[in-house]
Image (cartoon, rainbow, N blue to C red; front, side):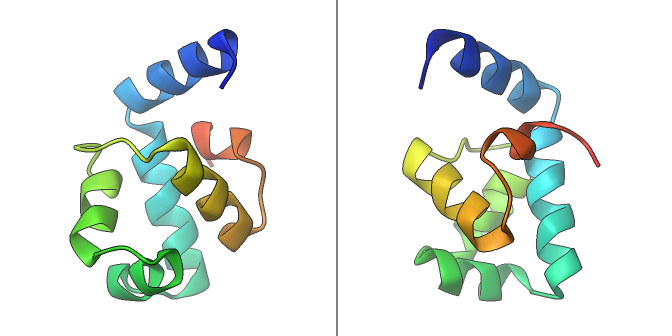
Length: 80
């Protein structure tokens, strides 16, 4: 990631926006954490940790989340 992008991501993460956005998008699809984990190819606890902002999704996971939800990676950083 570019430096400016990385800076915005870290700020959004600290403010809890990334986790909130993942939870919102997951719920809009009507999926459980387990269902999103299945689509992502990861454990349900990983989704839980992301949503609670206790873990940061790696770049490859951000890209996969964006693809699954049909949004840009940048859109994961903003509320709503």
